[in-house]
Length: 426
Image (cartoon, rainbow, N blue to C red; front, side, top):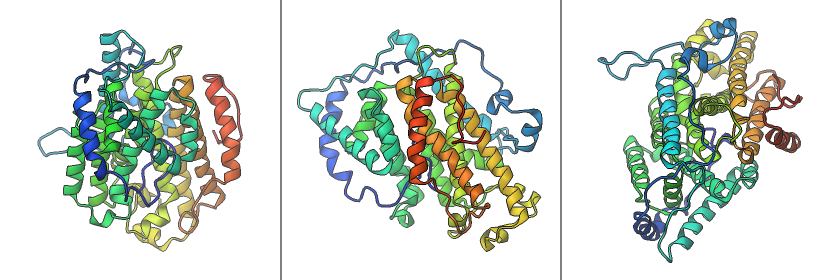
């Protein structure tokens, strides 16, 4: 199942056949120079958490009691071993949110400086690092054109960092969804995770790794969301059904919610924002979940032809549907009713996400607003197709995309002000 990379696009095939391994020697040169300056500096505009930790149940989705009953995200429990207490997927993910928010706050308090400092590199290696970032930019421009355009409004340090994160996420996704996916094993993913740990320690393997390694020095980015994304790839290798939404939520976090947690330290929070760091991360997580749920609803037919069903099995049963109905691919009244509820849930996550986008640094809002508005429209297109996501792929036309861009820009400039639009349903 493709992930919602950088809140923008689903990955396509064809990637990296000519990239990567040949650059390892140049990166060893970068590694030796950068080891002299490994101390992290704080992310620009990060805000300390001035309030007590919010209760998880009241934090997850800010909706009415009846909606919480109908679309509860607390539908199951997760136990990693027989010995440990069962923990809901939401609480497990929230622990990562708290860890990342704490890292941002700690970095800010320790440095007392809101400016991102450039890393110190030895003479002759800066050009190699610039080349690494340039190559990341080329990949982002090729595969996420709308998002790339928006990143050009960011400061140079931020946009380079976002490009590096995008490329790593895309390469990770290509391991299980790319042209060589049939040859990927759990061992290969273990090696990829080991390589991730190396680049976080300042030992990049290739040019793309070097860009990300430099990024995690400059911004307070925690490794856990990256490791969790790799875990999501492992899940795709071994799992093709999800008992309930609790299981599906964890999967959505692994493959898409993680991207929001990786990106917020780079995007930055607006200096004038009164929001806590924790609440902004919650919204970033919600946007990743919303995007992945939208991917799932759009790709039901495509996934079923691969023998995969990314829908809660218990909710299918409650609707009087089975796996056989998915494989048959016939749109019935039962299917329409089921899809209405699934779309409503995805929109609830989008609503939660909007609260955080308005708190981002003004220079970082446009690409996020654009992706949010465009992804919400995919849900509209599913409805317009009479919920036939078996034989029809819902997509947003080029005309609608062009219309969304200026509106997203207005939203990014206006910030917290409320403005209405027919582009996205409430």
